[in-house]
Image (cartoon, rainbow, N blue to C red; front, side, top):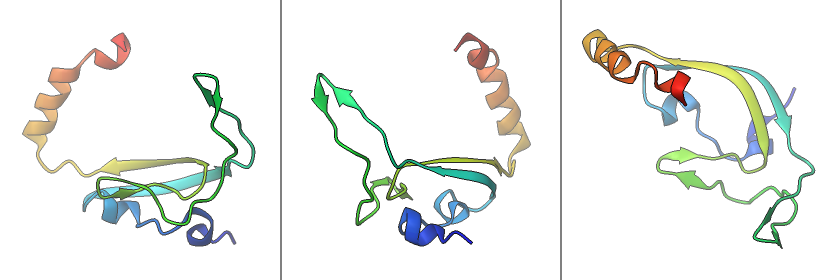
Length: 96
């Protein structure tokens, strides 16, 4: 069995990081062992595992390159706000 903590670093559970009401189901993990990238002609180097996880706000990022496939959903706590948000964003994804 794969030990995600030793592979990805100290990641909190998504339910903790994204607050109560979030449910997740992981499908597959694909780890990046080889890659290349350049910016303005400068080579950014090879993928490595960092010692400490980088963060965006309170959310910890994986310590190494990974493509995770799964699904997640938030509990709808305010149906009126949900419907207002849907109405206000209708058509944006298609126009994207």
